[in-house]
Image (cartoon, rainbow, N blue to C red):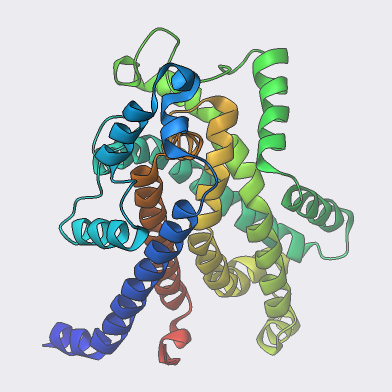
Length: 333
C-alpha cells in the first residue's frame, strides 16, 4: 500500500520527465538533421575519399540514390524519423553495420573508460574539496584551489598528450595506444591487459573532471562550516575532523552528487578527445570517424544517444541529491 501511494505521488513528476525527454529528443533530432543537411562537406566525396577521381558522375549518382541523398530534405527527415519510431536508426556508411550495433559495441568500450573516470574524479574531487574547506585560507587550500582552476582551463587533449609523454614515452609504464596489445583484438586480451590500456585514458578524464567537483564541494562545505549548527558544535568542543565527517560531508554530498551526475555530458565530450589521443576504440572515436566520413546515419544516431545519456545522468543526479539531502524532497519539481 505504501509503495502504491508513493508511486501515485511520483506519477506527475515521472510524466513531466517523460515529456521533457520526448521534447529534448525531438529538438535534438531536428537540430542535428538541419546541421548535417546543411553541412558543406559532400557525403559522397567523404565516403569515396582518395578514389573520388576514379569514379564518374553516374556512380556518384548511384551512391547518392542508394543513400537517399537526392531526395528533398523534408522527405529524408520524415523517412528517418519514421524509421526511428520503429527502432531503426539506419546503417552506418563508415562501418557497414546497423547504427544501433555500432553504438552498442563502441559504447561498451567507452562505458568502462567513462565509469572509471567518473568514479575516480567524484571520489577524489569530493575528498579534496572537503580538505580544502577544512584548511580554508591555508597553504593546502590555496594549492588545491590553484590546482583546480589550472586543470579547469586545461584542454583534455593537452592533458592527454602530457600524460602520454610522461607515462608512456618517458617512463614506459603504460601503452601508447589502443584498448589491447598490438596484434590482438580487444576480446582476446586478458582483463589485466585491458586495464593496463585503460589506465592512462581514464586518468586523463579523471584529472580534467576533478576540478568542478572539488570547487563546488569546497564552496558547499565552507557554507556548512559557517552555519549556526556547526558553530554550536564548535562551542561544545567538537574539533575539525569530527565536524567534517559528521556535520559537513553529508550536506556537501548533495551538490557534489548532482554535479557529478550532471557532468556525464562533459565526460562524454572529454572522452571524444581522450579516445583520439590514445586511439581508444570507443564511441568518441566512432564519433570522430563519422564526422570525418560524413556518416549521416551514425552522426544522427550518436546525437540522439548522447542526449539520452545526458538526460539520464541529470535525472540520476536529481534523485541522488534528494536522497543525500532529504529536505529537498519537499521542494516541488
